[in-house]
Amino acid sequence: MDRRNCAAALAALTLGVLTGCGGADDSSAGAAGDPAPRATGEPWYDEIAAAPAEGAAGGAGTPCALPVSFPLAAGWTAEPVEVPEGELAELVGDALTKRGGTTARCEVDGRRAGGGFLRVWAADQPTAAPRAALEAFVTGGGETIDDQRFREVRAGAFDATEVTWLATGELDEESSRHWALAVRSAGQTLVFAVNEGLITERTDVLPAYRLATRGLAVAG
Image 1 (cartoon, rainbow, N blue to C red):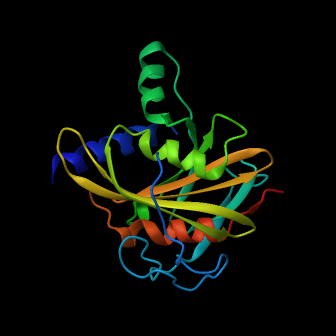
Image 2 (cartoon, rainbow, N blue to C red; image 1 turned 90 degrees about the vertical axis):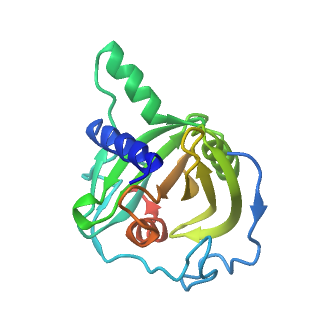
């Protein structure tokens, strides 16, 4: 159990309780809206299929009030991210709920199903374009960024921009793979993000991420 994964686990657990720059373009990723695998293997792993759906979030009467709705993977539960009261709590919450010009709005917890977390972040600047929001988001975590790649995709009812990157901690020098996708709806830019972690592999987090992003719809 390395130090990077321990730190990531602590941050994930704490945020659960509270409930980037230019890179390479993957222009050969395939036609937007094509649900079939387009880029197998590193770094996109499109061959990993979406998880079975069980419930939804984002729409009326569901957790996490958002301008989009999305399906939840079986065993995954959504909760709005709320910063607790108190000066120290606000400082801790701000460190974990703010990243690169975005604020965490929803956390989808898959630990009971053997997965990690999927988080939805809202851009603080309403006019932020998806690509610009992702560029700031990637570099907003304080890690060293490598192998950053972008592509244009279709995410349910939306045209979207997706990015993947390797993040290396400054102290432990351990790397982890991250994925994020951004869409605009009702004048707001939202970022859906997952990453490998302490006890989670890409096969644990990507199925829920694929399900959510491919099933995005305008919230009713």
